[in-house]
Length: 87
Image 1 (spheres, rainbow, N blue to C red):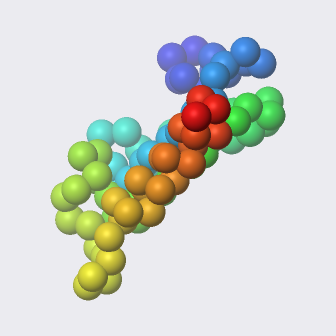
Image 2 (cartoon, helix red, strand yellow; image 1 turned 180 degrees about the vertical axis):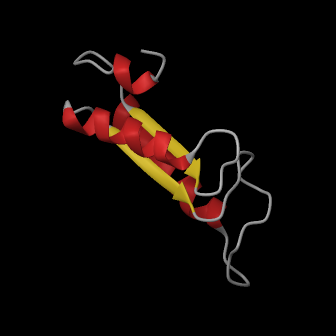
C-alpha cells in the first residue's frame, strides 16, 4: 500500500501533522486518514489544521483581519516537542 497510513504500527514515533484545508498537492482527507490510522492504534498524534491553507501553508489564507495562525501553530509545536522529547 502506497499510503503512509498503511504503515502505521505500534512502534511508530509521535506525530505532529500540520495540513492546510486547501492543499492542492496532498488532499486534506489524506491527512485526516493518517491521523485516524494513528489514533486507531493509540499512537501519539497532534493534528494542526490550517484553515484555508494551501500546500505551502501561505497562499490565499482566508483569515479574518488580524488573525495569526503561526502563533497558535508555534505554541502547539513547542508543546508537542516538550511533551515528546521531554525537554
